[in-house]
Length: 202
Image (tube, rainbow, N blue to C red; front, side, top):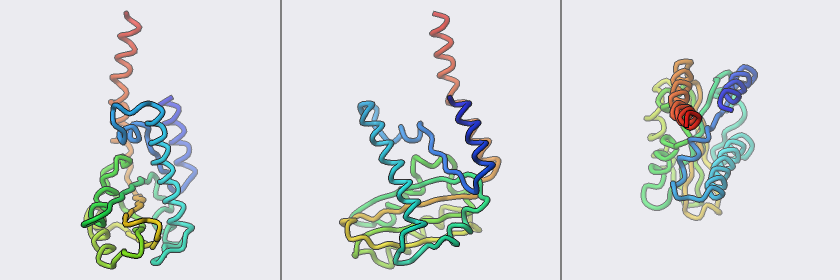
């Protein structure tokens, strides 16, 4: 299955501007070991749902500070693989903590400091301040390449109920990043292969 998935990823990457891949291992890292299997799958599905909705809203939903399609295209056109980061926080320094969560999200397969393009949207209720937007931008801008193309938007949603969320898409990773990721996947698969061989020998 891993070989089939890698082959499909290579084929899709040749046909699209940007490809976001979220591995099962990354999703499983979000749940505790004691979580029942059905609940773990539900949590993984919810993370994916949040990511898909977040990306769709970046493109489609009018914001207070808007990100239009030309902005998205400038960052994502011919950019290869992209990473998805999601952060959410409330209370004191919520903007800083949400931004730090987004750039260190378990969904990120590459170090975000190699990103050449970033689109992010800050969402909160009517209590959102300009200072919080600046704080979030400072954290994210400080974490990526100094020459990266960075575009952001803000959205006020009364239903956020005191929470502040950040949805981030990072793009522009190099071939070396893909090779390093592929090597990590191969190393992660080796214990499974060894266990299978041992079981067969028994």
